[in-house]
Length: 184
Length: 205
Image (cartoon, rainbow over all chains, first blue to last red; front, top):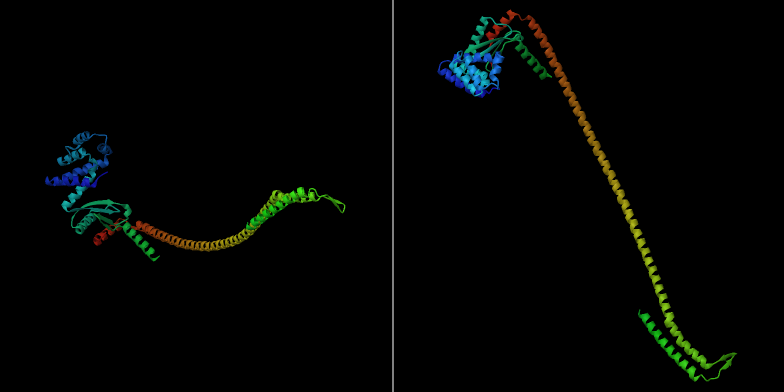
């Protein structure tokens, strides 16, 4: 179970150090790679989170695996997490680190969901439009969700701009129910 | 008691006089008239000295007899009479007391009967009052249940109507969704996205 406050503290310290040494992007890539490995490699995840494997053993193996693939700062973070038995916080630290990096770069993570794969020109238009709306650098993520039927949905932070057929049908459904019950 | 005492005193005097007279006659008859010759009167031999002596003996004997036998007997008879009188008096008193007690008991019985009747009447009145109260409560409760049932029926009706309306909305929109789904192709989708890009604006989500 991850503890957001713990992840925030580690992420803040990591980001401050990465910024000082100008390795923000490299550390982010390292964290993304490790998180991806944890997500997709069950054996690696079981090994890392196993309470039966000693801390020293974990540190040795992680050293062998990552010492020549990640930055020194990331390696130091991994050793620290293993020593403090905070290895389960890696994913949380990555998310918090990305949030800090976006805040620093005045960027915003925007998810564009559509029923079909969008062509490049529309993707560019959407990114430009969102950039104008937010006034920040847009980091787009494009998702395909056939159940949306048509149109596109934009989500960032706590904002939702729903231009999908499904969304409009749901709005219509709610409106009809509201009117029916109101007039009942 | 005074009368008895005076009577006893008088009797003692008389007795004394009689004894004295008897002794005198006995002595006179036995001594003075001892030698008087007996005479025959109307065929009966009469010895004056013996007769006088006998009279003296009689005068002595009668008071003694009276004193020794008659008086205790009379006293005993008097006591018995008094005892009987007392017994009768006591019996009369008891009878009177019994009569009074009977009267008292009859009065108490009558009073008890009256009280019992009054209590029965009171209990009947209380039972009638209780019956009225219970009937009123039952009636109120029945009214309340009827009202509650009516409210529940209304609520159930409203809920059923709401469900039907909701169902109608779902059916309508599902049909619409199918129709739209059949008509949205890539070209339409692109057009929808373009329109959205042109018209989108940030609102409070």
